[in-house]
Image (cartoon, each protein chain N blue to C red):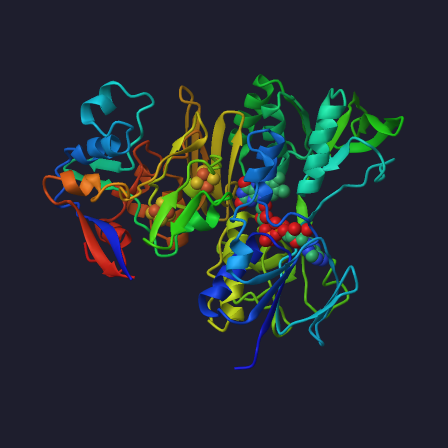
Length: 431
Length: 150
Ligand SMILES: Cc1cc2nc3c(=O)[nH]c(=O)nc-3n(C[C@H](O)[C@H](O)[C@H](O)COP(=O)(O)OP(=O)(O)OC[C@H]3O[C@@H](n4cnc5c(N)ncnc54)[C@H](O)[C@@H]3O)c2cc1C
Ligand code: SF4
Ligand code: SF4
């Protein structure tokens, strides 16, 4: 076989899983990773824990220091892939280095969404987005250096609330501004959102809904106040824009690689261009539930897509099974986990089961379609969460034990015995 | 490579929950059943999820999945596959209690310590002992250790 040169652009979870997959079958060919960030590795979701002071910088990597060496990866850090020439299979880096490759993975992640704000420009101090380690460090320095009062977080979605989680651990009680009529509108339903909103306000945070920032005012180059669409004005010394991320399409712009919201990939993580693959937050692959291509910007999806890409790149034909949206967020002291379609449109044949236990502060919601579980919300009762996820993935008909799904003792016992036995069997073992 | 796996059989389980007691003991500081239950604080959580309804019961622990979703989803590398033994193990020092592993474990066998925000227990097949404690003490062979070719 001719030598294959693998090139991975971006060095995060999709990249690491791609490397592991390739090295499982191909121990000899060259793998190069290019990243525009400096650290050898870090876990992006840990940034909010770092902000909160729960972990130090040493704990940010999710692989050991020798990972790249052990997997014989040529790791190029602090350089951007500026241009991609898919016909020549060449990538031009910031410092004019030209890399050629035979198979390429694009795993460049997302870019923060910044809504248009009057008076906004890059040189105002005290405004941050929340996606990269470098800006998180700057944010922490800023908090330590300045007298911080009246912090505003724009965006009450997952990232916004992760930021709130971090700030609260630091003893800062921010005001959250959310465009929708409730926070976590994409992943939660009305009840769950209102429980969380209540907890936030008990914890001293403010939530302003159905509003957004229209303009800002500065004093001495620093942010001093913001103006809301509703006409309100808030003084603030720190604004964190955490509306969300969208796929980073900069590198593929101007190439024949097909995009929609993200880079379109088939079940093998291939783009429309031969030998060019994409995975993670920049990719738009199959969604298990809708069966259409969707961007699901979460860690487990990036990991699985990266792995699938790596297998296919090394010649092991493997189909991506399609995952679905899921997340785990803790808000102050309420752990929450949600899966899939949590807030189904009325009609259209969805069935909803729910139970709120006020004494325990627990809330459980299950969404069914055609007797299959398609969505879950768990607040303060996350212990067996994965079993619900399994019901979604395995498309189990739950008609016969529907009444037991909400119970505190929900577990494998409610499943039909045959299926349970099949499930607990290890490979090669008959129970 | 030969891998060890714990196999359970619900038909043999009598619901005595002895396995849980020995699991806790094995993972306690003293490894002594009386001390573990009387004197130790915090007492470790058992890595067994015990389920019972009517006359059916079983004691479930980590199945050591072939392609462990908990490892794939872990944000920190705290949950990892020990290549040598072929077990999925948990490193408490790295864990931040993000509950991604709990979200994806299809068996629901990872227990959270919500207060300290760290995984409280995850079966380690008693790597420090010769034999898993639950297997050794189950009076009815409802929990067995088998070897499979991996
Ligand atoms: C604050 C925060 C909290 C989160 N919490 C969770 C959570 O709890 N659970 C969860 O499932 N998900 C969470 N996520 C989402 C999760 O981090 C992402 O899904 C995951 O990191 C995506 O991985 P990826 O491999 O696609 O690439 P990314 O992690 O997005 O990294 C892409 C990398 O490519 C680099 N890059 C971009 N362009 C170029 C270029 N041209 N040349 C070279 N390098 C380039 C970028 O600098 C970056 O380092 C969180 C995200 C954030 C921001
Ligand atoms: S903890 Fe759960 S997901 Fe992880 S290996 Fe064990 S059974 Fe599988
Ligand atoms: S709770 Fe701990 S072990 Fe589980 S995914 Fe998070 S960091 Fe990993």
